[in-house]
Image (tube, rainbow, N blue to C red; front, side, top):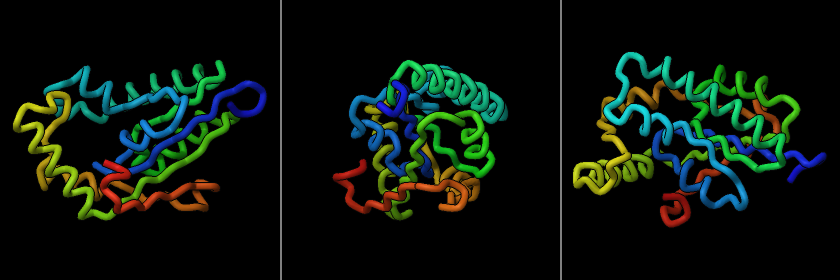
Length: 169
């Protein structure tokens, strides 16, 4: 727990299949707030052109929950991807005064593609009903949307560029 009885907020940054959710499970004594978990539960067939609008609503609720939980002394993982500078600026403003640690998971593209292929195979085999298929078009679209963070933007940014598939699945 951080100073004055408040929890620490760990904000995970990363592209598709970078290992954010897996990394979140390695942090001890943290409550994870996951945008993907909520979006898949609320919109299992996807939400098409309303995706951006619905995502922002989910993010707003998760930001409120993160503030409330850290105020109660709970350590929290904010697993939303934080793909753009605008997302990160909004979070920086929303979490002002909270002990915040920014973590960028940045494995090589080949490793992320391998993970997507494995995830897609599990979805097609109906072994991962809560996941969704990511075809090459969606993968490329998401790649182009991502704006890499910088140390100037986020002082103290921790960057993890693991290629070890056993470490981050």
